[in-house]
Image 1 (tube, rainbow, N blue to C red):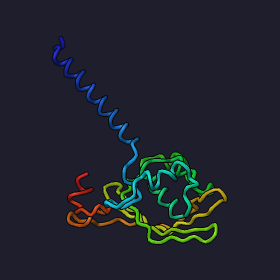
Image 2 (cartoon, one colour; image 1 turned 90 degrees about the vertical axis):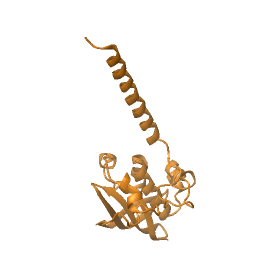
Image 3 (cartoon, rainbow, N blue to C red; image 1 turned 180 degrees about the vertical axis):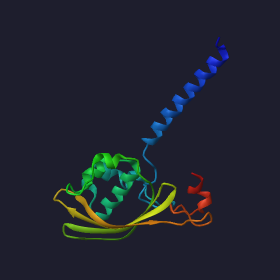
Image 4 (cartoon, rainbow, N blue to C red; image 1 turned 60 degrees about the vertical axis):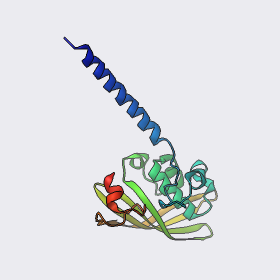
Length: 185
């Protein structure tokens, strides 16, 4: 025979799990306040004023660097449709590979960018966390304006594993020591 208090406890636990799942799914759909393409400092641009307008209308990306920043933010936020729209059709990966669980992107640093007519390039480094390691993608990306908007063509990439100690600056560019930042997440 089942005790009434056990049934009530199980029902309360189940309800608590459902509420937590609901809140978690609502939180993941809320856009961030600070744009993911910005460093984690007080003067960083808000998402509403930076990449969100480009995510809503890709034609708002008036330069290769603006599209590069919007693409980084789209990877952070899981905006697959935007990534596909911003990729040249000859080199775009499949939707399934873009939607697969990938790294947790942490920081973007644009080193240089230039535009000459309908061609452009952006040299950047992006820091991410995957499979228990901090890593960095260094890339020289090529872009082309197709008459409607800028598109990512391809890039020459180098992948590095970062060796970060507890007392080193956190790779996410928060300005905090590793032991007080991403190591605790």
